[in-house]
Image 1 (cartoon, rainbow, N blue to C red):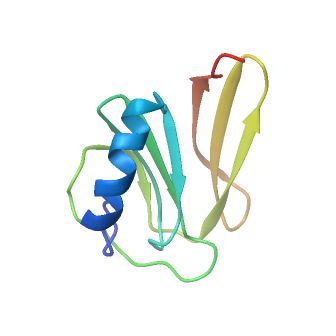
Image 2: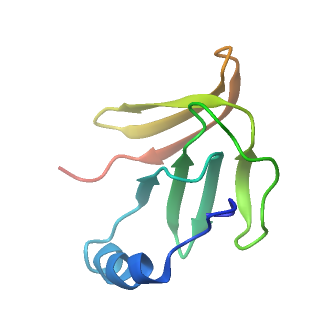
Length: 105
């Protein structure tokens, strides 16, 4: 995360090997009070923690495809072809969207 809380080394140490072993293509998290999409080593990391209070600004840890410090929410649509992730502000205005291929069944 590029939010003020950032990542937690102890969580990364546990999750990173699992992400690699299971060929994970997307990871969804909250906690940081912002909306983000970061791609690192081929994995999309989506942060949605902007449901109420947000923190202004970001710490540049990873190159981000999207960052917003506006209050808002996300929607995730999954079907047999792809996974679509939508980010909205608190008035339901679209801010960003991204599609990934659906994992094989």
